[in-house]
Amino acid sequence: MSKYHSDWVEAAAFVDEHEWNNLELFANDKRSPIGYLLFVELCQQCGAPKLELSKYVAKSSDAHQRAELYTQAGLFPEAQDTAAPASSASKSFATKAVLYLEGLKLNST
Image 1: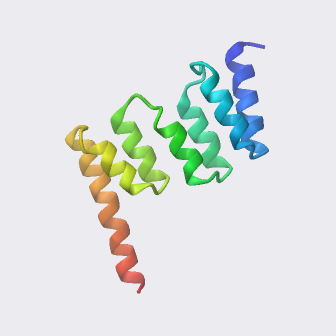
Image 2 (image 1 turned 45 degrees about the vertical axis):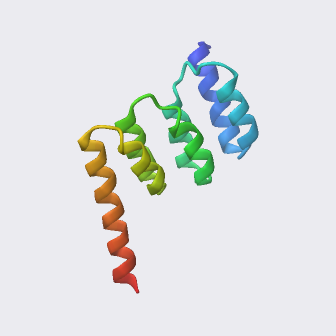
């Protein structure tokens, strides 16, 4: 079994068992050969707490991707903070998401 595959299996096992502390230790042990996006995707699939998602989103090196991932996770202040120094496309995406959700809140009351 390749290192990539064994790391993926180990990360998936921690997520399936909701062993967030072990997942974080595993992710921080070394630079992940499977990338941190996989950690985000695994956490999203099992409904991990937003705090767990934010740990791995923050490790993404692409600011635009981080802004999108924060928005998908419902972490709008983080998305805006990430998009602020990033490209205008990231800013626009984060701003539109916040305005859309604020509109939903206003319409539901």
